[in-house]
Image (cartoon, rainbow, N blue to C red; front, side, top):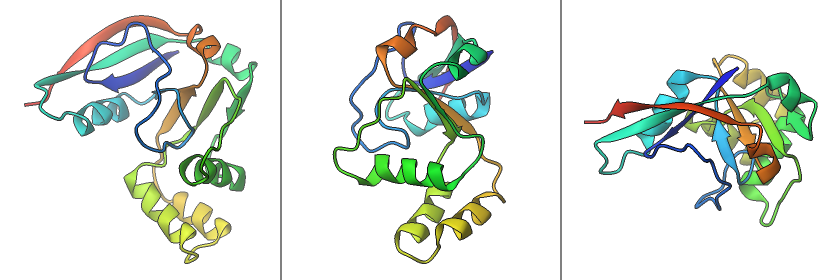
Length: 160
């Protein structure tokens, strides 16, 4: 199966890097099965760059499912708690090699803000999120996990 990582760089040898902000699934290397989502990640981080790259990898998804993996097919109460902990609980860490599930992008996170402020409860948040066409993300959280990636190529994306 092909997966994608949008970046300003060619990333032939992915690394686990300390994030400069809180992320849905914690620190690690984020990918998606959605090409358009990867392209949007490139555009979002463009800064002064003239171009970025969609890095394309191959993985064996069945192998990943049989590893130390947390898997969410859709938003659930467990997914809400996990994303909320990663984004809002200081020092929260998990020990999964892989985490797969929906992206809590800006539009989705606006709904999260309503949940965090008490306007929505978990059930209402899940119901609200079901109306969105959610894209996915697959986090490679450990060095062991990164070994399952095979770099195929990087496609240049013009940003100007």
